[in-house]
Image 1 (cartoon, rainbow, N blue to C red):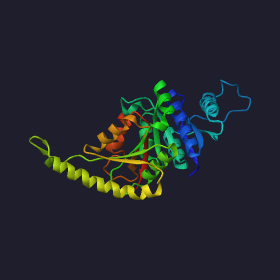
Image 2 (cartoon, rainbow, N blue to C red; image 1 turned 90 degrees about the vertical axis):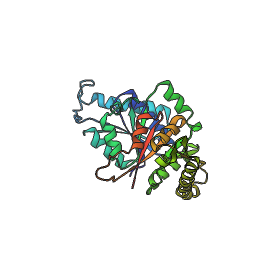
Image 3 (cartoon, rainbow, N blue to C red; image 1 turned 120 degrees about the vertical axis):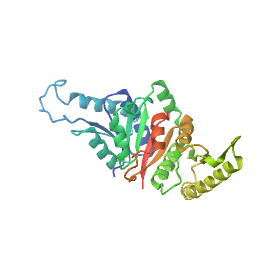
Image 4 (cartoon, helix red, strand yellow; image 1 turned 30 degrees about the horizontal axis):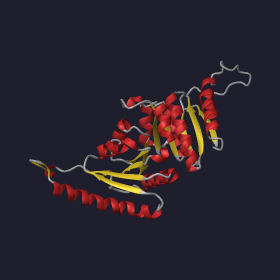
Length: 291
């Protein structure tokens, strides 16, 4: 694995927003930045090939212009360019496997197909070996959120079932490098017996919340010891896990969700929490594969 953050570019405003986010994150983590553009028709051209007539002109221009802007913003950041003659899915998965994380842009909240790589982005998110971050573009809102990132906590959604070391390490390192609190959120739906004729049975709800809190304390204890300088706020919310994470995302700088590397044969590659965050969270979303 190379010490770089990779970002996919396609010439859109959304992919440029992703590149800006990736550059900020690479600088915080003291990593390099790789600008990737994949085009299946990419091919070497003769040295005397005229400028705009060159088959690869626009592919090169997409990467060069992004490089120029990011170099002005981050003069000390190591930036490299990579143009590959492959289908986007393969190129992005290969880039993710070689990098610390992969960053992609998104077009909006309305539907899955709105991500700038469309179905390709979700295909990559569901299969990548490393964390994939989806960044939304929003003009002034994007710049305002970027400017006050140090005032916004980052959120990690925890299931409390099975190992989640990759997710927790990513979450703690992110909070540490940004100097912000880490909000650890666990959602737990109330069972049918908790609902009585006049509403929720308070004692049952309290018992469920207390049990979940003990489980969360056990999961977080070694990480608190490993990262004593990270302030952690843990919350148990008595609602479905997807709702809990989306509600917590409202004022955060980044939401981090786990994804099992090897889900059961009949299970979807992206679970309901990741799907909900991808659709509805207004901030960048990091999907982190774990065992």
